[in-house]
Image (cartoon, rainbow, N blue to C red; front, side, top):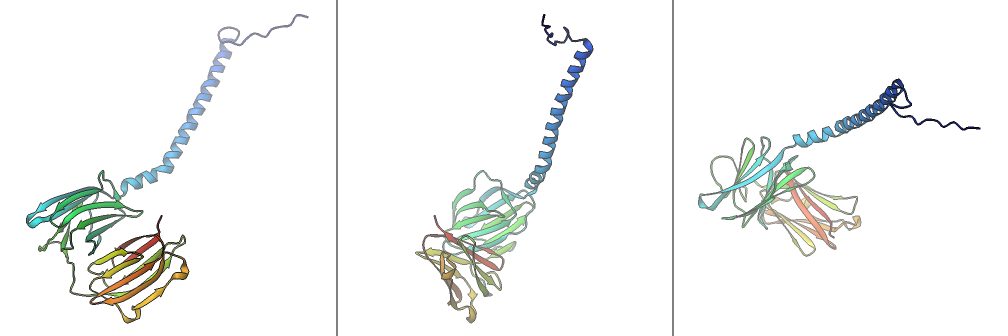
Length: 281
């Protein structure tokens, strides 16, 4: 028996013009369907990620740090932000001499984070970003009065200023602050946090580490008799063993005794001073 060979289907050959047109239409529809799916995926991606992009654009950023020299070896530092600025939370430390300014909700947009100054009593200015804020730290030879002014999107810190405008911060204040409470807070991963609550923010704070102790002096700050004590927190298995608070002349001293290698960070928010302690690497 003779076997019939089926012809190969090729447009313009065995397939009629009408059949060829239908085959081409099917291919076009498949191509359009593939394009439509890609478009839908792209739209979905943009809808999911646009809120994050918009939030990043809305966040206020610190865009520039500039400084200039004034008469008497004074220094004026300008912090330029993307939006009008309000006066930040600030505090000072005596040893080592530092001025710190906290900007909640502000992100960094700087190419260079540290600017050496080395004029008069001002050594440098550094900006660092954490999860929810930006901190600007001014290193000094010793603590001196400083003034903070705001103008539009700029904030100015004048070191060694005693003029008549802006808010002037002095190393010592006439009215004494008072410690209202000392709270120990253990963390879930072996870290610890000590909160010090004030009636008013202290004039400045001297914090340093000596061997296995963190020494903090709250200048011009009174301590009630009920808080003149030693807290033993060894049972919580954190780097902190004891927390001692005691009067020190017209100041208050806190001694945090630790064990093992540790790292610490202290910062102030209005009437609350916080000391974070975690195990070192």
